Amino acid sequence: MFSTHHSALGALDRAPVWLNSEPLTADGLRGRVVLVDIWTFSCVNWLRTLPYVRAWAEKYADRGLVVVGVHAPEFGFEHDLDNVSRASADLDIGYPVVIDNDFAIWRSLDNHYWPAVYLVDRNGRIRYHHFGEEAYTETERAVQRLLRDAGRDGIGDEVVSIDPGGVEAQADWANLGSPETYLGFQQGGNLVAPDVRIGVPATFPVPDALPLNGWALGGAWTIEERAAVSNGPGARIAFRFHARDVNLVLRSREGAPVPFRVLVDGEPPGPAHGLDVDAAGHGTLVEPRLYQLVRTPGNVTDHTLEIAFAAAGVEAYVFTFG
Image 1 (cartoon, rainbow, N blue to C red):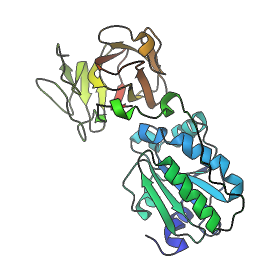
Image 2: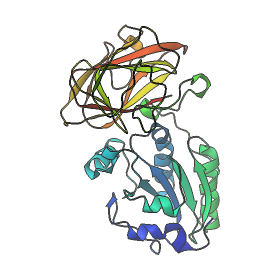
Image 3: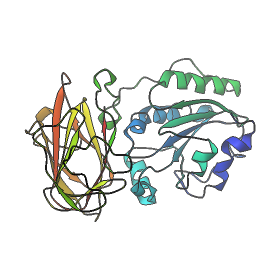
């Protein structure tokens, strides 16, 4: 893909903002194997790869591997350095992170995906890439191969074995029947409403029933380009889903905490509550991030989730499932 050291990692030289490290340069990384991980902190697909990237960074740190997390923001709030710093700390990311708000590194790799992993050999050539989740054994084998090629000793064949929990738990792919669903008008779809008005305040009725993977707004909302924004207390969202997990990316526009309540099929979730909700369905939107609302124990079937917010100014970006 790239023939010289400079072309693969040269964009790092022009990146001024780093976390967990002094700025790294292409010349400074010569002779090392570099794993470039393209991420953004609210992306569930990346969050599920993080435990592996974290484990590789730790396992191979003294064997010649440098992991560089390239944070390329999807949503506006992910451009904010304070938000990225807090997320990095909360997610226990100890390896170097470079801020790619202008997508210069993203473009230099001709990247199109979150998450994406690129392996760069000791001579600066990209020798392996993987887009999306999974392929963890294949990726680690490629790391081992490049470290051996770089003359590193003691590189075994064993691969990391981990069983992540929380939002990092691997998706239940066999029972995943609901797609990522954006709530802003730029990418949104499957909204069930008699009269969809975008970009202006409107009052929406929640229908009595939703088709699978249909969603609806209830109460006062404005559908903006990237998010649906609540205009009053009691505004709610309903979604008919088929998945073990339901996640929702949220931000409070005013920055003040906003309590919310989750119901599943009209009842408190009980044992089906997610990481950010208690058994009675109560949670609080504090920092902008992905919130896990539901984790279904037992068999996965169709359910309807409803989330209601206690105040205006909630930005709801995207539902994701696992």
